[in-house]
Image (cartoon, rainbow, N blue to C red):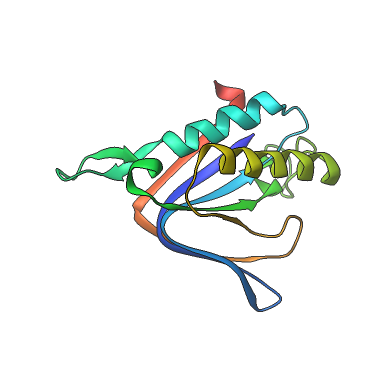
Length: 149
């Protein structure tokens, strides 16, 4: 499982020119699911994201988590995080989960985040062509890859 986490002042998702989700002050998560991912990867990634200390305290140090600031979360599926560009010029997505398995684990991820975090949690639409607007704050961008743990 790969996640790109961005601290944001604002983020939204549009599908067919309609806003389907939006947040203020929190994190945008772009989530890729591989064909090797398990429910253990789901729980590890969700817990890591919700507890990441990437928000500034009174001294300006990144010392606070999403839970501590009461931030919001936007989660967007992005299978292209598994694009392999080592050969040729067109990415290969052979390591990405197929549609059904990816959707199942994506939904489990969202459900688990909602289980461990009581703040606002919204998503894009799995498999849709989305316009994602992210106003990165900092900028702060963190990458989590369960294959690296």
